[in-house]
Amino acid sequence: TDKDGIYLFNDIEEGNYYVVFDYDSNRFDTAKYNDTISSVYELNLDINNNQKIYAISDKLPAEDINEVNIGLVQKSEIDFAIDSYIESITVINDNNVEKIDIEKDNSLPKIEIAKKDITEAIVRVKYIIDITNMGNIGGYVVQLKDIIPEGFVFEEGQNLNWKLGTDGSIYNSSLSNDRIEPNGNKKISLVLTKAKETQVLGAFANSVEIVSTSNDMLIEENNLDNNQNTQDLIISIKT
Image (cartoon, rainbow, N blue to C red; front, side, top):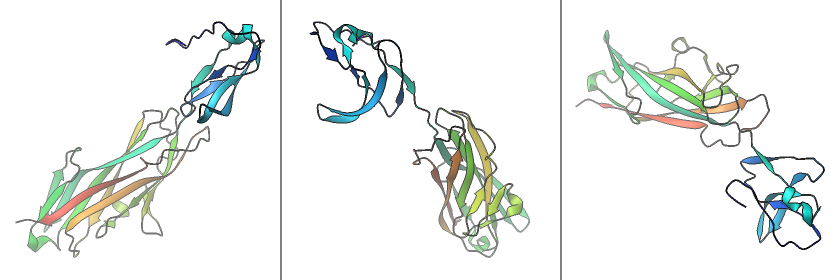
């Protein structure tokens, strides 16, 4: 077989044969050919101790085995990936408001608060949740879930389309009717607050995940490894 998939059998004895094609069945489906010569179908075979899916022709006479074609089509795949980062941190204390913009590539933002202000300051952290369709068909993110870091609270007035669940996590379904095409991207924001009279110091992890997705072809999302993301934040005493 050459680089273009063209093959030729030489010196084949008379008789009937099957033509077997080795291909990546995880990435491709076979396109069936029904003509006067042959049809190709998928079959799980053990060839040379290699058990896998092959494409195989009908039994053919030797003179016809060079005429079998196999067409491959890429499998339809839905695969959403989620990322999150902190866009800004706002510190409110005694009528003073300080907004700190955070670089997107800062994976571990850190803020410092004076010791005398640690229980009085209000700290609002604005997260950006970034969703990308890594698959090859369009689809929908039906629901997102965020697990609030201990010491932080959710204020519904600061957050459009987020709702507090009975389990203490918060949920967002605002993208459920917003189709995301392959390589397409959607962003939504979330603001979490360290309220007054809470002495919060240390590292805080905010975790967000894709709870469910859908698509018009009713294909299940197989790769769930990229459906969850955690963004850390450090709050310390200013020295």
